[in-house]
Length: 171
Image (cartoon, rainbow, N blue to C red; front, side, top):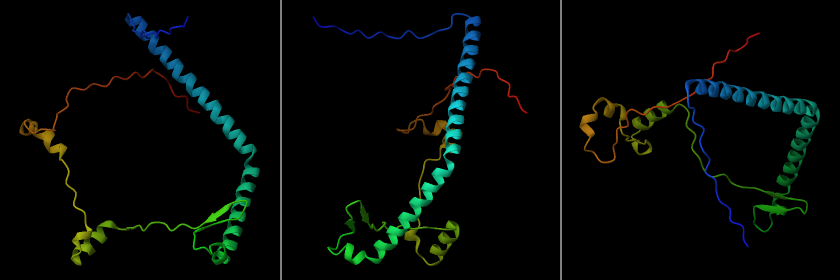
């Protein structure tokens, strides 16, 4: 005989009166504050552990940096021998070292001046012109675009939020 599992549909909680709504908002605030207290305790514990291990962490980070730099310098000096087969990596039994060429990229500083210089040099092909829908103009004249397919005016959407009353204690 096999067991059949039936899924129970969760019944949503719905307040039945003003008093129940007020009580639910109070409970919501209590739950939010308790969650914040727990998160704060967790963060305090993480901060304490990190502070306790700070010297060890800093020492290890420095050692890792020193070892990485030392291996890098040795590998650069011996790159031809390490990559004699024309490859870009070498297996050193305890690990692998590799060199990878980054793809080309473009860095632009002072975009407005660069655009002006490109225009002055008649190099407009390097300037991108972007077309976009002017939503502000559509909102100003909604009747003009009612027959345009793909445009839908969204109006009257309400967002509901609950903000339990709290005071912030300042020291």
